[in-house]
Length: 295
Image (spheres, rainbow, N blue to C red):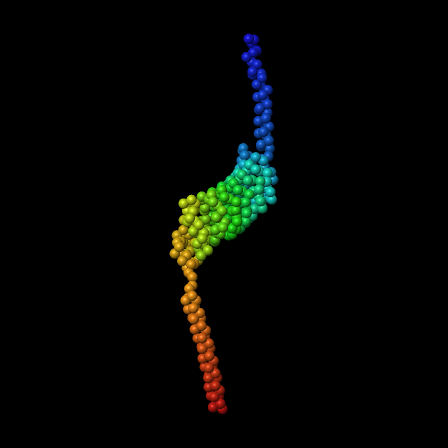
């Protein structure tokens, strides 16, 4: 065997190694080329947090899986902004100035599992707001102080949602229809809201109690703010007895008694007016007679 025979495999592998290194370099260069200004890109994670941005970055790497736009000043998101990012799973928009989301924002981001919209300016969760995000597992809407209305169809399509945070908003009531479709819900946080614990609260409270073993709630933080007699009372301390007055019904005897009392009050009123009229007339005649005598 010649002296050069042992070196032939190395000579054959040399070009292949060079080609592999070149391909890796091209892929790495391509992955970094789409990283927006003021953002940091590592793998599929794009971090644009805390950059005082007033608008979202115009373009992102197409394989973005985790996008953080937290702690900025973003007030709106363009229509169709997420249409090209099919790999997106985590979207962090907390601590911005958002008051609404464009329609069908999540149409192209159907793999999204975590969405954080806390510390924004939402006042309303609209119907079908998250309809296309059917894979969503965690949704955080906490610390939106003006959030006072949740549409009955706000969470439609989120059957896989496991965690929902509605704490520290302005909610005084929550439609049971908004929650009944959340069959996979495990954790629900509702503390820090000004709940009105009237008759309309009873169905919602019954639903919470029926899910208490499956659905973890911040029960100690959820307190009534109205009516005055139950202010600061923990929501979960209310019992069926608390809503007893909501189920009072009047019988026929009750209606007859009310009608009789009304009739008596009416007669008494007429009699009183009649007596007052007679008294006034007598006083007038007496006064006139006194004037005639003096003359």
